[in-house]
Image (cartoon, rainbow, N blue to C red):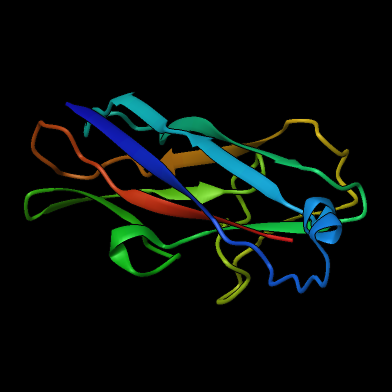
Length: 155
């Protein structure tokens, strides 16, 4: 069976008040994009968790911005048990901020972690890995399972 997790990028900008057109051109801004996490084929009889990764890439125009990136819970509405779905069927997975897959990447609530960086390099793409895992032994039928997770950058 094939299981894919899609990520959708959503940019959120801080409010910036300006009094002159020149100041508007100097206002801090950031862009964010994400590559999908694709788990490939999941076998319910495998004894090991299925792991994969994706990437969040951002670029900010000012070096003085401190940024944070959070991930939404997806369709499950919870960080502790994200699920991909195929019709009414669910396949549990999660997204992590670290390669050890010990820190769930969320919005900083409920024990989740967020990515933070002080003074990212200006006008350079910075890529951050999203580590992902599907727990072994889930009894699901063959097919394509998907979820959409928002990516939010605050600066």
